[in-house]
Image (cartoon, one colour):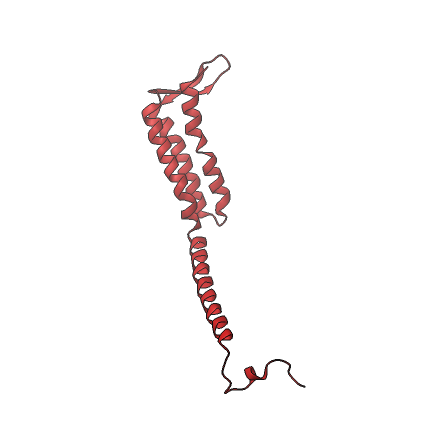
Length: 140
């Protein structure tokens, strides 16, 4: 059986052409870049729960501090058709309740193998402070 191709590559003492040297150097650089990118992706995957939780925690705390300053002393919940609230709670409870719910969803995310489901629920819980603010600022 005869091999086809350049016989200079098959001989042990043959000198490589300059083009093959540049090509092997380019392959080495591409391999190193690929290794760095692969390492970054692996670490992002390992830290995915922290990466997902960081913006949720930031906005939950930001909304809580905003509501603490702008909500009235008694916050109405369950707005009825007549324009009155069925129940009122204190400002602290109206701020800490949604914040606690968001943090509970994030704790479940850290305990769960499937992080995205709990993370999406925690993102939706960020709407609670906004709804409380809007319903108490513009009740009619």
